Image (cartoon, rainbow, N blue to C red; front, side, top):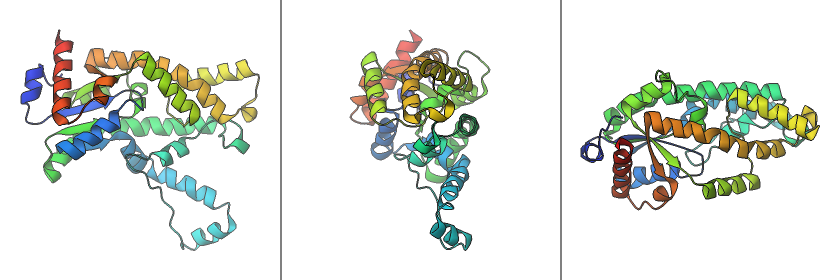
Length: 288
């Protein structure tokens, strides 16, 4: 870890952290608080993915749908309208919409092969966005005079790294520049995340092996063909299994590459000083 003790962290003139964990446990909330109250530079990996690495793919998908409408087709072909995504730190819907869900086309589903192709595009984009982090640390300081830096990672970071491999390129690069912090939820948090997801299922990125196994098991369990699958039903069925799949990977990232803090403690933060105290305590716990 780049900070050997809690006291070293407190005394550091430049504090740099990467927050990771399941979506919905406070990464963006804490990052936004630090940006607005404490003057930290906020680097969102998902925003970087949706703009720098998949922005053109997202816009082309919008245009593809618009070309099916005669009026919009005519306007697009004459360069009379401009179509682009309006992705923000708080609204990643354009990225989620592009990733899509597999299943019946009349219910908005994608063929499974196309779904997996887009998943692979996301995997490559996420790795690139994570590896961009050191450059943004330098950029934040050089251009904007930000010494403190928080990287708000996507929930799928654990899917694109090998936390048990001491030579993992992404984790090695990140740990040289930032303190990796797992926001750990409880079983109650997990149950709440599942309930929220059930109300509004959304596309997500998962490891290919996990998805292939989940898809095969779902088709076998339901007896449905690919074209008969309700896309929302599949992603709901997959989500709880994904949480169980991800948790040990997050734990290994914290154990081998960083520290962990409780989601409840992050939710109770009032300001930057509380955050500094919480991270200092986490570092000292990890050091034993």
